[in-house]
Length: 425
Image 1: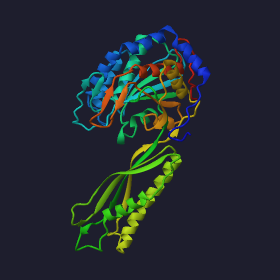
Image 2: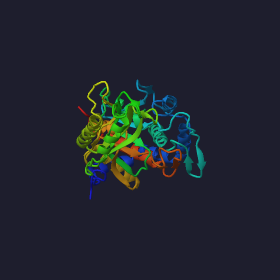
Image 3: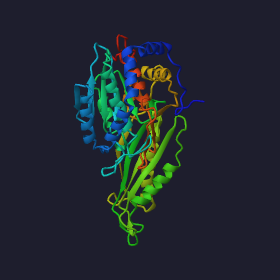
Image 4: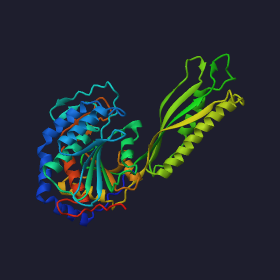
C-alpha cells in the first residue's frame, strides 16, 4: 500500500525509454559512460581531497574556490562564484534547447575545527563529510569530465552548480538563490550522497522556528508568586505541544530540538528559548500544525501569567517567534520528465531502484517552483552521515555519474537527438 512516504513507483514511459536506449548506443555517449567507469580511482582521490577542505555551512568559501578551479581545469569556460557563494559553471548547448541545472551541495554539518582528515581501510573511507556530500561533489565533477572528454554536443544548456547552505540552518539557501527567477530553468537534478538506486521525487517541507519567552525574572523565594517564570511557561507550552496528534498521512511531524534559559537555580527565569522543527509532505498540513504549535506557545504564556494573577504589562511574560528555516514541500507527478529519465536510466544501466521517496534536499527549491526536478544518488554507499564516525564505501561509484549523464543527455538533447525536457514559457 502506498503512502506519502512510500508512493507507488510510476510506470516507465516507453517513449522516453526508447529515446534513451537509442541515445545510449551512440559512440560519444558510450565513451562518456566508459570514462565514468575508468576514472573511478581519480574520482575517489578527488573525493578525498575535497573532503579534507573544511566546508561548514555558511563557510564554504575555500571549498568553493577549489571546485571552481577544478571546473575550469575540466573544460568549463564560464565559471563564476555568485553573490550567495554558489559555484556556477555553464556548458552551452548548440541551439535553443532547454536549460538543465545539475547541482551538488558543498557544505557539511560539521563546525570549524573538526578534523576532516580521511582514513582508508580497503574500499572504505572514514571522515566527517566523506559521504554527505563530498560524494555528490565528486559525481558532479566527474560529469563535467565525461561531457568534455567525450566531446558530447548538447542542444540545451547545462548549468553545473556547487551550492552553499543545504544543511541545517543553511535552509537550502544556495538552491533557493539559483531558483529565484533570475535564471531561466527548465529542469533540475540535485545530486546527494545516496546510492544510485535512490530517486527522491518530492520535497519534505520543513519550517523551523526559534521561540522565546521573556519576562522580568526575580528571586526564587522573595518574588515567588509575584513574577511569572519563562521556563515554567515554556514547560506548559511543551506539554500542550506534546498532546498534538499530527496526521500520519500525509506524514507530518514536530520536534522541540533545543531548549535553553534561566540564569541560576535560585532565579525565576527571565527568559527561555526553544528551536522547533515542523515537517510534512503537505504544505497545507505543515501550516495547520504550525498554527497549532503557535497557539500552544500563546496558551503556555497566558497560563503562567494567569496562575500568578499577573496583569501589569511590565511584569507579564511575552512571546517572540523568529523563523530560522523554511523548506517548502511538494512532489512531482508520475510523468515528470526528470523522474521518468531517472527511472529509465536505472533500468538501462541495470541499477535496482531501492528507494522512491520524498526527502529534504536541494530539490525542494525547484520542486516548489513547479520545475521538473528530482534528487539522484552520487553512487557508492554513505553511512553514519552527520556523525564524526561517517564513512563511505567506494563501490559502484561510477553509477551515479552514469545515471545523471544519461538522464541529462535525454532531457537536453544530445548528439542530434531532440530534448525531451519541455522549455518553460
